[in-house]
Length: 195
Image 1 (cartoon, one colour):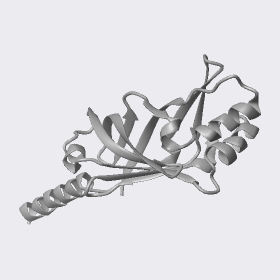
Image 2 (cartoon, rainbow, N blue to C red):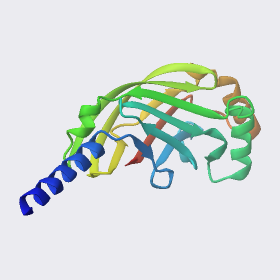
Image 3 (cartoon, rainbow, N blue to C red):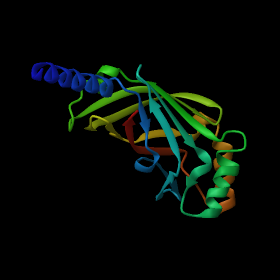
Image 4 (cartoon, rainbow, N blue to C red):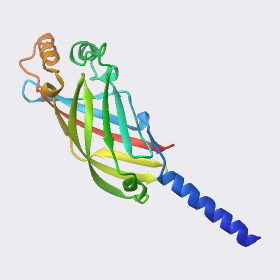
C-alpha cells in the first residue's frame, strides 16, 4: 500500500511538471513594461512607456503581444493627448500587435533559475503597416510557473517604416521643436505566468 501511494505521488509530480512545461503563458501587465525613447533637438532624450500591454504564448509557442496605444504615458498629459491624436491616430489604430514563434522546447528545457539568450524573428503591426523586426531576448525561468523575458538590446524602429512621419512632423510643429528623431529605441521586460 505504501509503495502504491509513493507511485501515485510520483506520477502526480511528473504530471504537474509536464503540465507546467507544456503550459500556455499569460503576460502579467503589472509586472511588465514596454518603453521607448524619443530624441528632440538632436540630443535631448526622454523615456516614455505604455501603461497597458497584454500577451500570451500558447502551447505551440506562438507569441502574441498587444500594446494599447491609448495608454501611452510620457509624463506630460498634453503630449500624451497629441501623441494619441496626431502620431498614433488611435481612433483608427488603437493597438500595435507583435507576433512571433518560439520553440516550446526552449521554454520546457529551461531549468528554474536559468537564463538563456534567444533571437526571434517577429512581425510588428503598427499604424496599419506590418514590418519584420528582430528581437534579441534573454529568457529566465523564475519558477516552474513564471518566466521573465527581457530585451537583450533595444529594438530600433524607424517611424518612416510605419507611415508615421506625417504625425511626427505634426508633433514637432505643435511643440515648436527644430527636430524629433525618426529612429526610436524600444526596450521591454515581460513577466509571463503559466496558465
